[in-house]
Image 1 (cartoon, rainbow, N blue to C red):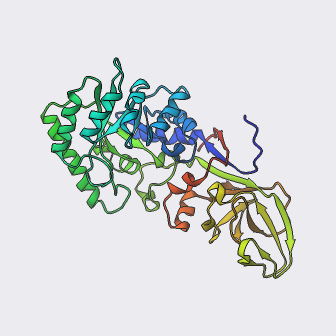
Image 2: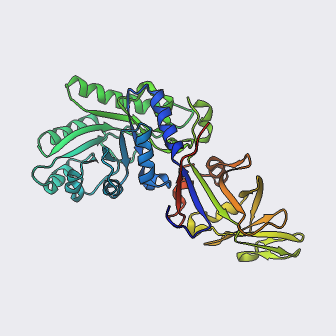
Image 3: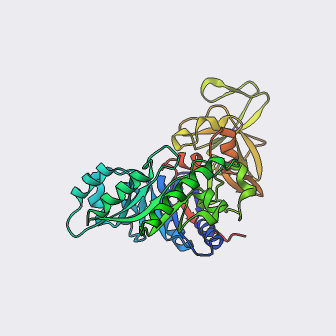
Length: 378
């Protein structure tokens, strides 16, 4: 293992990743391919190690947002199919073709430009994006989809591999808009089938849809946030067909412990004042690591199975917590995860900060080293 000098680290349980993928595969009876979405450095977990664990768990395709992310996987020796789900500049078409990386497309003019960058003997696999109501990227009408497909057919260096859309509200309890989007996508697929159009991969389901609406998923699902053991939305827990195993924990140590008198102020701005003689611990993590200052507003850590409050303002590299007694320097501090049956979850932190689960691990920077373990899960 690489020598680590930081007293703060992330622990990623690869077995949890594998278990979550395997649970989804069982739900679909092995009848659909699973795309493991590892964009944004595997949602902060580490793209390469997550990709390998997901493939071991039964995933067959990897998804990224950027061509650069896909290239990183290839450079590490990963040979599984990769699809870039976001828009790539047309100049990247040649590299993608050489490395057998599929790109998303939704603009005829992009196809005209992309083909100029593909060298003879290579072909570029494409997934056509249909905007059924997300309003982000994608072709907006069936007629436009047909025009894009015709343009692909006309070029021998372009290969249609997939058709997809993305749901805006599959993680909400009100399914009205989800059903509208699903209907639009179904309508497109039916039209293309009536034209005897052969499309190897058709995918519309994200994590929420793949677990909630398995009979409407076509032949591939995209497993993103829930592959990491996180709820797409905190009110969906009762809706899910299997339990998710969280993969990420965040730990640090006490780097300094001091006794302060009543009236002492702590951290920038002196916003915290001790109301009595207190023990204060310093923890070497801060907003420079992605542990943002808002975490001080009601945030807690766990030491020896006891929740303790974050006090004062979080600094770039350090923060302070109030201790119940003197504790030794080096004592482990849990920011995310479990300690003696007490647990702080990413869902809890997201709720407290008024955000979504996706954002919490993605914010943790590469200053925080990732350690990979394989735990036995119950």
